Amino acid sequence: MNLSESEELRALLAREQDLVVVNSCAVTAEAVRQTRQAIRRARKARPDARLLVTGCAAEVERAALAAMPEVDGLIANHAKLDPRAWNVAPQRTPDTATHTRAFIAVQNGCDHACTFCVIPQGRGGSRSLPVAAVLREVERHLDRGTSEVVLTGVDLTSWGQDLPGEPRLGALVAALLAAFPALPRLRLSSVDGIEIDPALFALLASEERLMPHLHLSLQHGNDLILKRMKRRHLRRDALALVAALKARRADLAVGADLIAGFPTESAAAHADNLSIIAELGVVHGHVFPYSARAGTPAARMPQLAPAAVKTRAAELRAAVAVQRAAWLATLVGKPLAVLAERDGTGHAPNFARVALPPGTRPGEIVIHTPTRLVEGLLA
Image 1 (cartoon, rainbow, N blue to C red):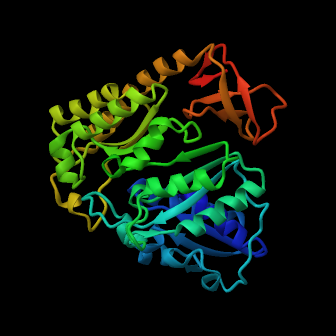
Image 2 (image 1 turned 60 degrees about the vertical axis):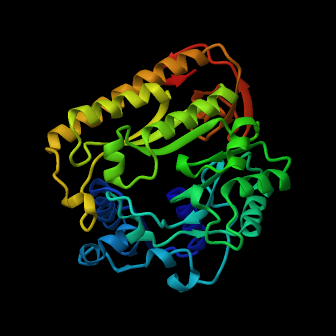
């Protein structure tokens, strides 16, 4: 989501030579700390530039960021892609993107009330980009030779619920694939498994152009903790979804967001969080140590000691690393269709990262057969 928005900002402000923009995040206290650090670094590097801050931290931590001497002003998060907020003319600079994949934000905001989350405070309610607008955006990227489109959003699987007729994400994916038969690869960012509609399930299970990569906004493996988080799924829902998809598409790679050390998390609950990694076969893990956010219900719950949170996060990461290493080992010796990035690596359809031969052109999809595993990278 941030990649998509930052590229839009880069294009919008391409002619503004004396402007520095920090597109901030507030999902954790660490993200806010890094935002403040980035502001200080930017001011040191560009002492004479105008420095503006936007993004979620500019909403959630508005007073604190505005008080920083390095900051010249704040731009409301909801208005940051509006040229009027920056006092610039509407424009698109087609060659500013720095990624070989196109990240397209089709949804923004969130209508849910997870007890740990400040995203609704920073981004507001759920809004969807209409199908026609999504198709125009995809066409723009395909005209530039993009080989992979990634649909993203704050709550991607809620796409369409605010549009006439309340279409589901499966309808958007089907429309996109039908409109662009030459599009080689379509990928979804993080999804809420409980919101996957029947049409989307069918496409994930069988459509070769929809990448076999499912990243779940899982958050935890214990039912009591999930209820205290106000998540809408239980452990069994995630297990059933992945089992049903893998039965139809054996090459499906599973990713998951997991929170370590949520308030009231017992040793048994942490054990459930650890064990679901192996049961789901999580090979792409995003582990977040719980971070209390002011104004959220979870911040008022009994907190774990910071050392315990840190330890549990490390244990979750280690469990994911075990699954990932075993999975990557199964890919050695198998031909993979790899989309080349600019750093000499690329991603297979299942999002395995692969080192490519020197001279491979960025943006090209090449068939490469890895022969070994080097520090978590297929080569």
